[in-house]
Image (cartoon, rainbow, N blue to C red; front, side):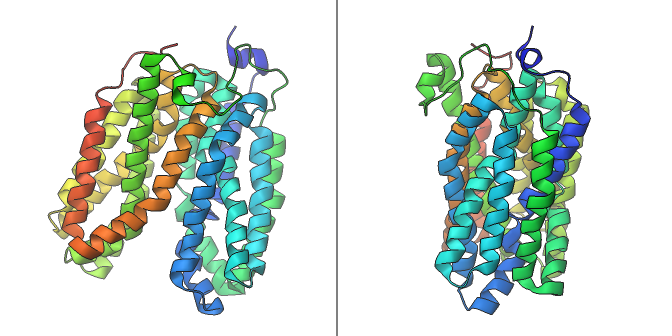
Amino acid sequence: MTLPEQIHPPINRSRLVWAMGFTQILAWGSTYYLPAVLASPIAKETGWSITNVVGGLSWGLLVAGASSPAVGRQIDRHGGRSVLAASSLLLALGMLLMGLAGNVATYYVAWTLIGVAMAAGLYDAAFSTLGRLFGEGARTSITGLTLLGGFASTIGWPVIAGLESWIGWRNACFVLAAAHLLIGLPIHSLLIPGSTKQPPHPVITESPSASELHPKTTNYLFLLIGAMLTVLALVVSGISVHLLNVLKQLGIATAVALAIGMVIGPSQVLARVAEFSIGRNLHPTWSARVGVFLCLVGLGLLISGMPWMAFVAIALYGAGNGILTIARGTLPLALFAPQGYGARMGLLARPVLVAQAGGPIAAAFVLQNFGASALLVVMCGLVLLCFIASWRLPTTRRTD
C-alpha cells in the first residue's frame, strides 16, 4: 500500500488543483506582483521613497526564506491544510496592516507578516502539500497548479490596478485582505484534505543539514539542486525586474520593449501546457535540462539587440522559466523519497528566496556600471553553469 493510500481516502485531484490554483493566483497577485502596481501610488501619497516601498517585497522574501524550513517541517508532520489556511489569515492581516500603515516601520511590519505568509502559501508550500498527499504521483498535479498560477500577473495586475484607480491603494489593500479572509481561507480549510495519520516512515522533524537528509551520494545531489535553483532564481529575479531597462539600453523603443515583455506570460503558460501533455512522460531531470537550455538560448539571443530577435529570445526565456517552475517541485520529489519532501522543499526555498530578494540589486549594479550587454553576458554565464551542472543529475528513479 502506498503512503497516500494509507493517509487519505480517494481525492478529487481536479477539484483540488483548481481550488489551489485559484488561491495561488490570489496569493501571488497580492504579494510578489503587488509592488509593480501599488509602489508608485504608495510612494506618491506617503512621500516615502520608491526604494523603501519596493524594498518591502525584498524584506518579505527574506522573511519567507527564513520561515520556509519550519513551514516544510510542519507540512511533513500535519499536512498542508492548516499551513495554507494560516497563510490566508496572515495575508489578510498583512494586507490590512499595509492599508493602515502611516509610516515605513508599520509598512515593513506588514511585509513581515506577508513574508511568513509567502513561505506558508506560495508554490513551495503548495508543492509540499501535493507531495504529501500524492507522493511520487504528484507531478501532474504540480504541473496543473503552476499552469493556473501562471495567470497570477495576468489577472492580478489589472484587478489591483482597477481597484487602486477606483478606491485608492489603501482600500485596495482592504479588499485584498477581505478576499484572503472570505475566499482563500474557506478554500484552504474546506477543500484541502487533512491528514488523520502520520506517514509510516519517519519524517524530518528538526532543521537538518542536507547531510542529515540523505547518505553521501544523495546529499551531493541535494546540494547540487539547491545551488542550481538558487543561481537560476538570482538570474530570473534580476531579469524580471530590469527587463524593460535592459531592452531600452539595447536600443529598443519603449513601446516595442513593453510588447516584448508581454510575451513572457503566454510563453510560460504554453511551456507548462507542453510539460503537462508531453513532458510528463520524461524524467524531471530532462525537463529541467530543457528549461535551463531554453533560458540560456533566450538570454544569448537577446544580446543581439534586434527587436525581432528579442521577441524570439524572450519567448524562449519565458518558456524555459515556465518549465523550471515545475521542475523546482518535481525534481526533488523524483530524486529523493517522498518522506520529508516538505522539509526538503523548505530547505531549498531558503536560498532561493534570498536570491530572489538580492537578484534585482545585483543586476541593477551591473546594469548601471557596465551596461545591458554585460549584464546579459553575466547572466548567460551563470545559466551555462547551471546547464552543465544539470548533466550531473541522474535520470533514474529516486535514490533512498
